[in-house]
Image (tube, rainbow, N blue to C red; front, side, top):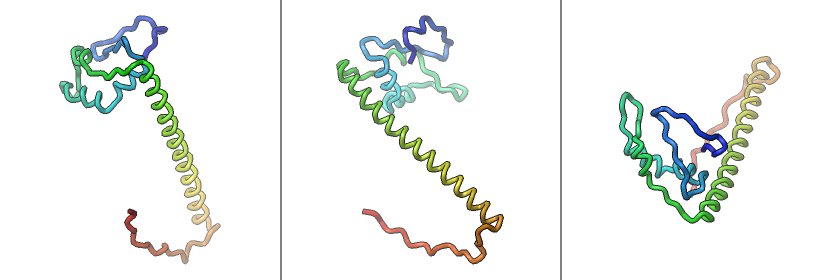
Length: 133
């Protein structure tokens, strides 16, 4: 998503620009990342030498669902809040992974240096997993 403040741009043959005419630019960018748009492009891409290529005609003809501007902004707001929630969840999971790795390292170090006695340790009996309905 490139704003008008960037002025004219150069591109090579492997880049296409989508101009947001009659649509909120961020909405168009989000639409082009949907599974529908990705599938639409994927079905039309010509694969040569392992690289998928699209024609400008394909880019011009991609169908875009364009609701009224107010709805576009509402959808973007809803998408933004969901993205923030997912990012917070990912951040929390990454912090938990880091903490668990640190604890694992400390536990291994303590066992190796003899700070804890693991000679008589036996793994707990595993219980058969129960179906969760």
